[in-house]
Image (cartoon, rainbow, N blue to C red; front, side):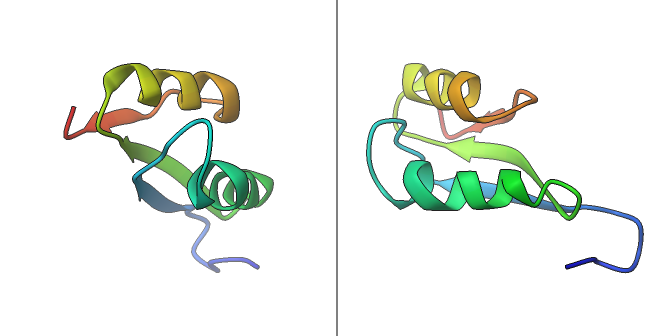
Length: 68
């Protein structure tokens, strides 16, 4: 898939639990495998530590926190 514009689509994920759930197990791996088209730029979690863990484990570049 290509956006045709030469820009990646920026994505924010809400409810990104690092240990379980759809975000960690499916959405983040799928989006990072399509890194030519998508860039995860924000993660929202209820705890800052959780966001930092998922960012360190699954993302190549740090994302910004929303709601923490």
